[in-house]
Image 1: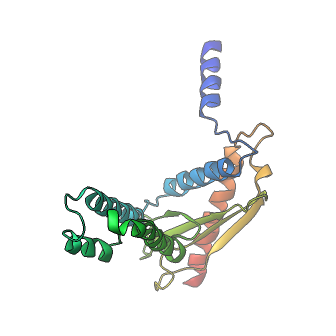
Image 2: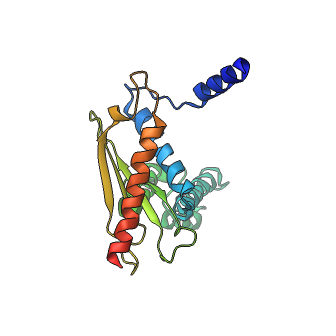
Length: 209
């Protein structure tokens, strides 16, 4: 019995989530990761379509860059090819070397546009909950401003224009309420707070009906 207790205590220590309390990114990463676990455990399936679009865009940009870099003709023989590259995010070789930096600016601008208009502070997109009559899933967002201990978690409809879109709900608390002085996440307390927020969103859904 003592051996079993020792094993269970050691396994719980191994599974404990620990953050560097001096590292803003480490704290937010652990909280965001745990939020995703909690939401998906409630019957919501992650929607990765937007992430796939970003990955596909990155692959296209890299592919064009590689073709432009290793194309076996020099300017002006490769003029038509370079024109095509310029249209699809300008990358070039030799004569158009300055456009290479511009291409990264354009590519990053497109990605930032996606982040600003779609992702913003989102950490998770979901499909509608299994068994739900809602036609839209959730978008879960979080904020932890630099040099601040106040973590804000927001749950809203993934499609605000949908007829079944609900009013967003949010919670703001100090991260000191969820971490020990050693940086270990007290998951029991954090789970209760996140679950309460999910329930608040469900109540908003009932009110709107």
